[in-house]
Image (cartoon, rainbow, N blue to C red; front, side, top):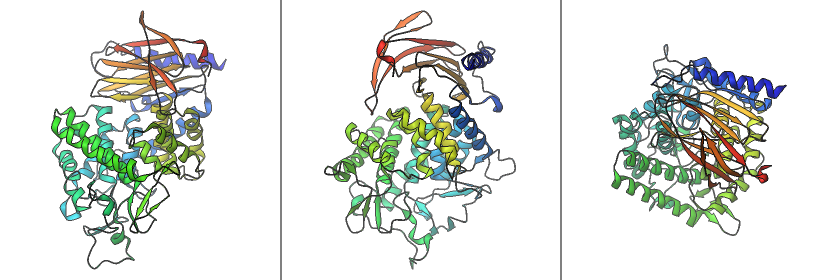
Length: 497
């Protein structure tokens, strides 16, 4: 009976999409129809429904707020958004239809970069379009984590791939922020590859410096870890630098700036060489996480950033990082919120699903990053959505626990419209394209597949290996604007996972 009811719901969702299937431009869903998830894994569906409602409760249209459209991305009750949290919540926000909020908040960060702040911007901005008093007194006394500029850069590239908004690439406010971040900011804070391991714990501090004043000692923290004294470099900052340069390179390539892209990739490679050459402990089979003023390594938080930012390309070491993460039982919700999307991407679906269902029950579940992380975990993990405005492509993959499960995500904002995706277990996926452009559909399957049939054509799948060793199978299908297609896979007998 449950199977029949869900199938009827799926049919209704798809029928709603077919109503507009002949239009020549993208279809933007109404807010109440944006990113609606249905699944016969009811605990998963409930987790998503809770997260969607919670996340949207943090969103503000900006009508009465000088800052413009924004959502809460900081400690609750601050009525503010910080660079780290916005960077980490932005994909979930985009999925929920908050693209204008994302653009406005990233633009606010970019427009406030200045030499007076040593090429920092405001770490946290409130609804009044002012730096949050909890983190800022004046341009010489404020709180700032040095990861932030590069975290914002990689997030802005993601926003371009989801929205197709060229302003992320070409708007002068953004490009000024990017250029200063990879030049003067690096120099001012001694973050260049050739100097980063020799940097002191404090730079560009007010004079006289008061070691009891957080706005002095935390003006330029070299990590998102904020409670480790004597730290001169965290592995998360090293990973973020690499990710920022990669994003800078990709944006340059999209603009046709080949030489700039090549230089940026060389810089990213330099940080990767430092990580793999100096931070990996062969004896212990793990990465160190803290480098201190004593010239010693210590262990603490930071390992997830290596995976999140693809800071190493060594598969065995990436697997060791996953083992490292799973061996620690007490991650805070800021880290836990990112794990579902991360673990699905790396090929650890059981761990991802467990955390997805656990997050709404956490003591700090009201922290905004939690709900946005669940939304991203379901859309990009369970449903496998991965868009590229650059290539006009969209990847889907059913990371469902069993072939008997079904799931639909309706009205996901993408480019100039939206998509709806339905997975019938591991064996069939239906995609409706209302994005405003023809797209290349990269349909992936988690079970061994002999062939895939779509629209009367047969496709031979190509294997794709994940970090875990799990093998996916993908085909590429042309999906015109306004069309709905179903890709059906002939599963091999070994597909009973």
